[in-house]
Length: 115
Length: 110
Image (cartoon, rainbow over all chains, first blue to last red; front, side, top):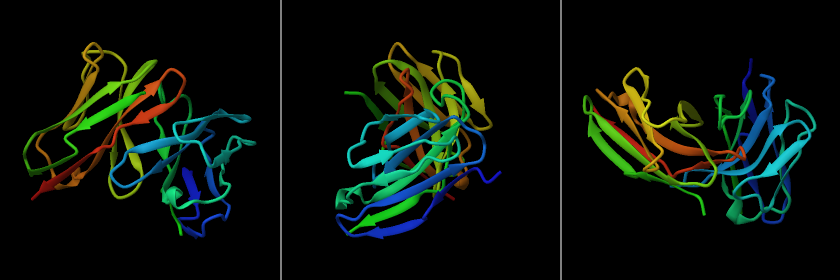
């Protein structure tokens, strides 16, 4: 198993550009989520999904879109990048609910810089 | 507004010392308390606590939850340099969201 994979590892964007951060898992996990981590901060939940076709907003959803058309993939779209979105982005997945029963596994992260 | 507060934010100790990391929370619809360790990259899971007073242990690490006073502690005994990391506390809510604290950065001196 590759676990949770994220691409790209690094990305530099200009203000106003759009892009998609990719996240995939090969563990047949139902729950997937996106976090951002800024210096001196913990992780903040952007969006999450409890299964294919179901997504919901986390703490900081503004400026980001997600969709979950398959169990394996959970892409995060930045609609119009802003410098405030400069951050490290982590995708995570778990078999069931990470709040109740199951361990959440994190991907290696994508470091995004918006100029 | 939901809050998860960790203390201290930073801690430097010598190898062999015992450390206690604190986590207090004010979160609606509490379901569980989670501890993660973050070294260079992605966080890795340590513990999930759902019941008060029941200690969870893994080697030199242990954790306990007090749901009445709304806090948890993470203890590390006989620390080693490999324990140097950021330790993240998080609360899982019944709506499946997870709220993280800012973390405690622990540095172990040889």
